[in-house]
Amino acid sequence: MARIFITGSSDALGLGSRTAKRLIAQGHQVVLHARNAQRATDAAAACPGSAGVLIGDLSQLGEVKALAAQADALGPYDAVVHNAGLYTGPDTFAVNTLAPYVLTSLMRRPRRLVYVSSGLHYGGRAHLGGEGEGKGEGEGDVVRSSYADTKLHDVVLAKAFARRWGYRHGVEAFSVDPGWVPTKMGGEGATGSMEEALDTFVMVTLGTGLRNGGYFAGSHEKTPLAVAEDVGLQDRLLAELARISGVTVPE
Image (tube, rainbow, N blue to C red; front, side, top):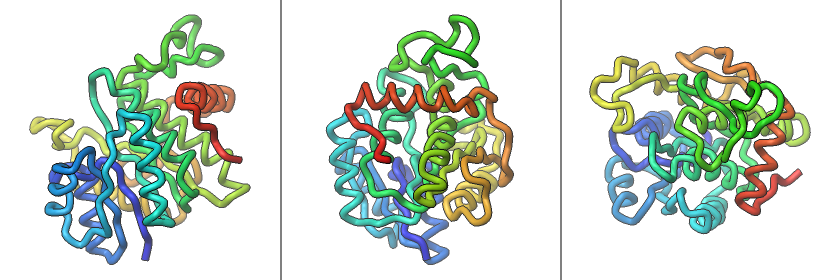
């Protein structure tokens, strides 16, 4: 059975908590994550049988670094699912892009890394400049990235870590699109299937027979925005996140 860490898993109706419940029901060990103590209490109550709940505000770099150490103390993990996310606000980039990068770089390598993206990534820009983004369109301050931009970053992170760590360390990295589902973020009017989203999350988390670096939705591999395949862009994103955070990717 697998041991799994899922960020952003405190909301009983959210994908993180629901995925954790399904994995626990299958006999896997799941460590949850919450932003603060009250939400940690909520997470534990919503997901009986978890292997623990870790606390850390992913918008605060110091807390992300501390969370990495806490998580490692309960590891090692077969999979780490970077599920936490914000749709809007000043912390969108910090939570959706920077925190997954820092946790990935500081934690011991799991067998699988999962980055939660969105179909909205097709309208995103990396904001790093250079080839593949269109003249002038990709330039700008990456810290001010929109939700769609950060979901593109998550696809790029999966491909970057699959390329860097796949052959050398046997690490698999995937990105996953749950679709527009009725969570707190998606809203009651969401038309996507929650069951299909959970099936996809569990499939990618357990990772059997999937192509390393793939982008998955509806339980199948899909083709992401073409720029995500740009190795130069992948390396520029890692370099910019290292510059911002002071945390470099271990070789």
